[in-house]
Amino acid sequence: MMDAFRIDGGTPLTGELRVHGSKNAALPMLALALLTDQPLVLNDVPALADIENMLKLLAELGCVSSRDVAGGLTLHTTDASESHARYEIVRTMRASICTLGPLLAARGRARVSLPGGCAIGERPVDLHLTGLRALGAHIELDAGDIVATAPRGGLVGSTVFLGGAFGSTVLGTANVMSAATLARGTTVIESAACEPEIVDVARALTAMGAKIEGAGSPRVTIHGVESLSGATHTVMPDRIEAGTLMIAGAITRGNITLSNCPLDALMAATDRLQAAGVSVEQVGNDDPWRARCTVSMKAGKDRPDPIQITTQPHPGFPTDLQAQFMSLACLARGNSVVTEKIFPERFLHAAELSRMGAQIARQAGTAVISGVDRLIGARVMASDLRASAGLVLAGLAAEGTTVVNRVYHLDRGYESLETRLASVGARIERVKGE
Ligand code: EPU
Image (cartoon, rainbow, N blue to C red; front, top):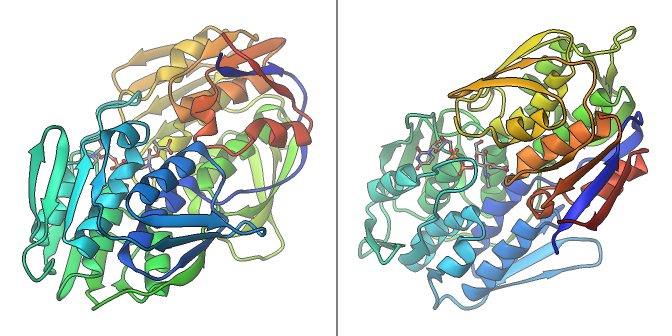
């Protein structure tokens, strides 16, 4: 039987939570261990199913890992003979594609099963391949696998345009950037993804001895080096977990304080929260990548104001917070409009929210949400991580009992979400689902 969350809604959440390390920064960062035969130590890697899967894959690729008592994760590549990321693992986790660039750069060859579609839509990897081909790789498809070979003498630096119909590609940028660190000469990635996770991956690579300029901007320049060494790096805090917890505070009309919060990477989200009548205030003047802040509805507001949201590549509003904001919009006083420009099919939560009494009309990549004054608990499920997070938030605000089924999706991206929410007053428990 699969786990579910049972939530008795309606309690305002109050208290303090520390934001965990970022899943989406950690995943491509773990694969960097393939680039060196020395130990890479990463702090603040969250304990998530996706991370475990990535470690399993890396183990098959000759990289052993261990966690120390303080939570540091050491990765050490001791055997470079195997370069095949098998379908059995790749199909459980698309981020397996992150091994492609590092394997190709360090071993001259890679065989990585082509990830399939997933619940949020078709997810091609053509841009990853374009980028690696520009560095001289020969790439073909064989029996569902991407088979890539570097030229004799290794990859060669080059200029590559990574923009596609939906903007740039986050993991594609990570793949090409990490491969280019060991290429001969200079690589310029134009229309690189500007996501903060790319900045963090570049920082880890720089600590390993890579020469990278411009990460976080659309043009990243990488000067190839002979070899990379081991390093120690602390993973940036998870901006999507932080945004989700902010909404948990707002939607329950509570008062949440977050520490280790990457406010600097959350400007689009906090802008939309302010527009909805939610106050997000930094406390003290810590590094804005690891700030302390408080979140609550503005004084005198009993319901959110309606909002317009369009998901975009960073620094625009992140698609990974779209579902959670939709739950907030469900309770707004007025009509909200949510447009999804990154994954136009990513609306699995909308029909489930309707089962809780939300009023949502969807057409293609846009949803119009007519706010209602209350949501009512129901049994719901969603087959993607962020959609499930949106349903949990709705359940926290709803009247009565909500059961969110199939929380294994949530477990892929949120470390012990139910215990954390319970620690700030939520009535939520893990139960056996349907
Ligand atoms: N795209 C292409 N060709 C490619 C690659 C992408 O057309 O070769 C398109 C995609 O179909 C999509 C857009 O470009 O429309 C952006 O996709 P991107 O490649 O940036 O996504 P990703 O790197 O595979 C990461 C996150 C996702 C997040 C997206 C967008 C990780 C492990 N995953 O995926 O996170 O939604 O960027 O920001 O970093 C999640 O955490 O729930 C999640 C899905």
